[in-house]
Image 1 (cartoon, rainbow, N blue to C red):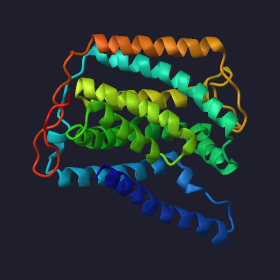
Image 2: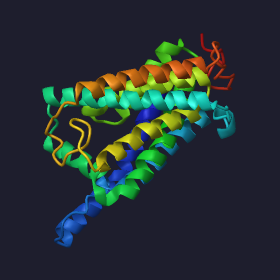
Image 3: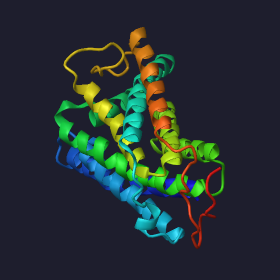
Image 4: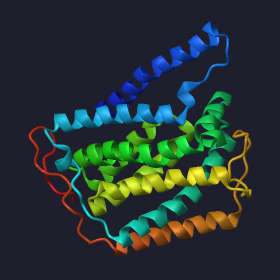
Length: 284
């Protein structure tokens, strides 16, 4: 069922991308102008993301006979938990940036993918729409689907570690980018761990937004940090200074320690009895 929901979201994305591709052809072949590449516009990608993930979320709620309020109750998180999650994810982004550098060094991405990533995530002309898509839309829609629906359901049938890893794999695969898989997998595991120990999807949305906002920040910094700030040529690989990698590791561990210290030792009961889905047993 988890795989079905992910495939449904991807199918909706493909279906909504077809009109955009047709519009590109009309402009290029019919009007003899440069194709606008609508599929690379962050605002339109965000709209597609809302419909695709929203459709999968609605279908998941219907299958489990859950209302939105029951599926996503307003669990409160402490300021210490939010701070610990934020700090740990900042450190994780620094380390994952270096991991991405190593992956691109061993297996350079194709030109079409680097061009797509540059226009979608790093173009200075689309800064406002990138913030709207990366920092607001993607964290809300994707976390409600993956941590709020999929992980919540898996926790009723599997041990927390198993459920978190399965959800993270699906989350990484959802991005359809092999060069982003490892980073998305690790972030997905962290977010799932936060969800299991807090019982709140809100902290996952916050953490996802922080990760994506750092991508935006690194793309507009006025100074250069080797291996960290984005260059115009994404095929060029630079490695980060050792002190930056070490700092990222320390920040990650400190953040995890802060979060764990501010979290009750017993995980909250996340699932509940539903007519068609979860068994409702608390995670062990």
